[in-house]
Image (cartoon, rainbow, N blue to C red; front, side):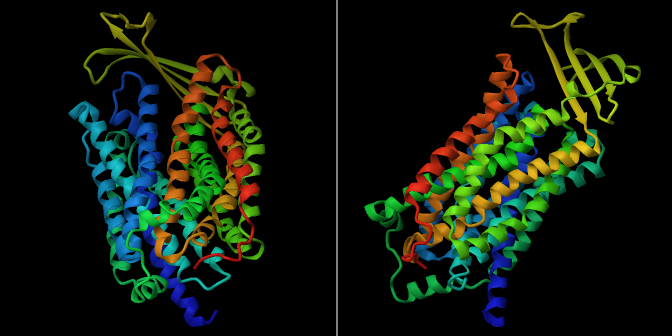
Length: 511
């Protein structure tokens, strides 16, 4: 590559990546704050149901992504890549900012979760149009034989967006008191996005259209009906289905297991302090991100197929051992309690409903430096424990702060999962772009990507958490591993289809 062409593509990547990163930041803020959001926008009577409702709302944004892919993909193939993902950027930014402005459930009742759901759906529509545009735009600027390397920079943006969301949350938590963060500070990360969106808009406004698309448009070779040509043509539809069931379906579940499920697992199942989880996940993401570039570059040399399939196979084989090791590493059952340092404080406190609660706060310390804080809240009625469904209404919240050695152990175990993500995700943009011709590329590649990631991947946190809760209630001693069956089964099906039907190097690739 000449210096001129390198400078040109770096400008393209910088402009595309910044916008895409901000859209992922906006999309992930909701997931990163799921535990807090569940207490704000949903009824507080049943914390487990509220958390599952939050995950379901989170998943709704993923489920609607394929519709965004169809709508904006069609626009991208009709009017161009640049203007389409300008619209998606503004739509995403506006929806994110407004989520931070919605009053709580206690203030406006069921309107709160309804408004959150509507804005979450708008976020999903926007993201459905963003990724395909950015990946197509970069690939159409990249030199032949280097598309895996250059598009892999776009692949890093999702992880960087998640990392920045975690860092903004951590910074906000550190600046404010826990009470301030819980009261209103959790809204700050949503508000911050509007500044980043404005900056990205100014950068994208000065970008040129993709030269490949501009040439096709000048020659009158663009599609007049991208949806019909993408999905009404049996030959092209075959490749859309192969992309979905042979690649993006498995890539989607590996992606969300390695990042969101790992995060929710540590916060809700392992009860580790939120700030510690955000920090160790952030470190794992920093360590893992360069491997997107490595595997994208490697896919130019050896082909996309075996790198993506290898990542899926490793995930299938190693998820259960990894998560068992994560759980056992920090389980207080495996630690020595320093009984003499245990304290119990009992107090009566008025709650937000102006009734009384009896609160028992227990602090425990363990020989290895781990600490445990357990707050048990017993709701009272006429001076006695309130009975719901024949049981006393008791809410128990446990927070474990782990020692440095355990933190590094978890960083390593999450980093290994991020490596699987980089293998399946690093080459996928180049793989998808090369499957489809220019005139219907935006539409054709966007749909399988967003069905695989949005539906199969996006439903993972809610489905897996539901499996874990059911197994726990049923008394399964390894209840915490049950949620992994979903990604393992989906990735296994995808692995078999991909190995049988995907060619490692297709000499008839489009560009």
